[in-house]
Image (cartoon, rainbow, N blue to C red; front, side, top):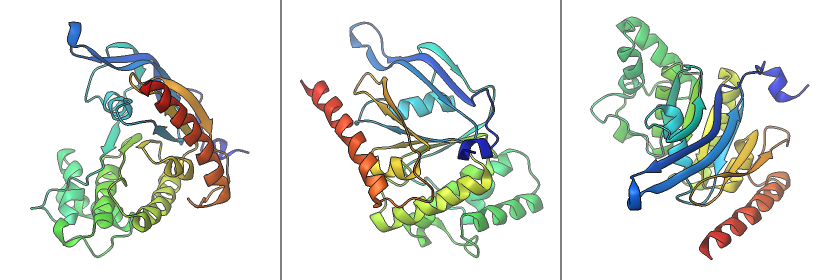
Length: 258
């Protein structure tokens, strides 16, 4: 039985894009960011979006999150809730760590005692027990990202969107957070759409790696990642498939530069 079968994958995808396009501006100033993107994400999948800078990866996340509107095609998430985590933790400096995690719960109208209880549970999940009363400036970059992840989980969303959440971190911290994210993904049975520029990171984390073309963004490859978990970013299996994807990405970048 496959990993996805054990996660009770449903026939209908949680995310479905069919021939989605996104254009900014109009007339001679129009910029086509995405062109005919078709993609599905099943329940429990960890799907990584990869491509050169400016290929529309973050635009695609914004469309799924409902922060922007498609220009053409069909985008369907079935009314499901999404949460979005950015490269920067974007914590409120005047709030404690617990206060930052509680914020989505407060907006949902959850009572104060229940908010505190749930926030402390989430801080346990991201392994920040005992840090609830700290302020963001007292934490390391990796710890702030853990808080941001706890805040995203507090939204109790069906789909977690992650836009290069570890891009600004050093290699060791990033490697540790890869392990933590995979653990949380398994334990919480998350569905994740993850944007990255790092090919090895994509292969390390993903069930699939979706490669987008240079602008306008189109899906040019869909790589299944079948290596046994847990994976190491420097393992021969990860390195080998990352090399294959990197060669394809380089060819795409070179084609676009001509």
